Length: 120
Image (cartoon, rainbow, N blue to C red; front, top):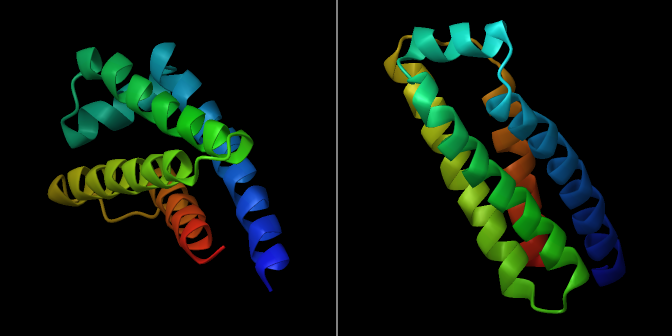
């Protein structure tokens, strides 16, 4: 059972790293769609590099957590990403944006990564 959970953790972690990494790139060179979306929910364009850096740190932490035998690095990164995307969901809800969008997918991936990390 542990081997299956470890394999699942690595697979979901890699998927999360790739998804969050792609999303992060959009925050450093934001296309118009991201700028419009952020404006609609009240996030200033000047915040994007900081938010992108936080997401990049989470993805990098997951990557290090897979490759280094110090499990708390990956766990801390997964917790950080869960907190980040819960915050993103709250920002969208406060702006009356009830649509299912990217931050929900990333939150689901981060939660799955964290759960699999904790059980493997």
